[in-house]
Length: 176
Image (cartoon, rainbow, N blue to C red; front, side, top):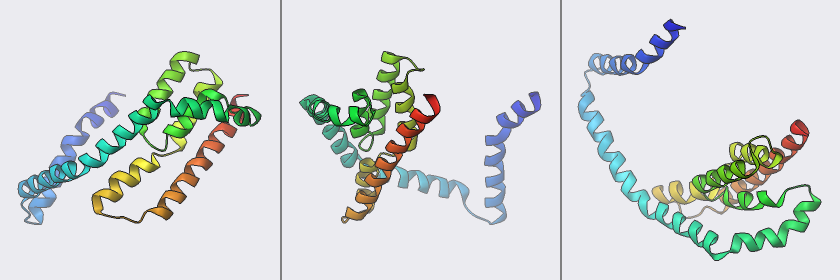
């Protein structure tokens, strides 16, 4: 066990040394390449800021307006028929928009019901089985200037719906 711990502690320093040795063998300016990469990272971060701000504002408007609560009430009879607890509805709508908001909802559900409850387990599996489709499309497509994202949006949302459906079915099958 001590050998594995010492290897894992030395992994990053050894990786840096290997990269520097490789750069030296290729006669590449490693420090110059590192600083250029840092400059590019800062430029990319600044270009992503408006997209991130827009997503955060949209999420806060959805939560503060009560739209999620209205959707919960409107869809609860249908989802009850499908054996989907109403407490998961907000998570199902927020997950494609924001990872941090859905993670906060998962934490709230786990704190409310406990980690062994069906809702907490289903929410955890949904969190791991789906992606933040709208966030990814907005930020990454916006950063590279792609304007037409209709098909990517359709496929991404269909994949999220499939992931959510299968997550609930797995939770029912495995934990019931």
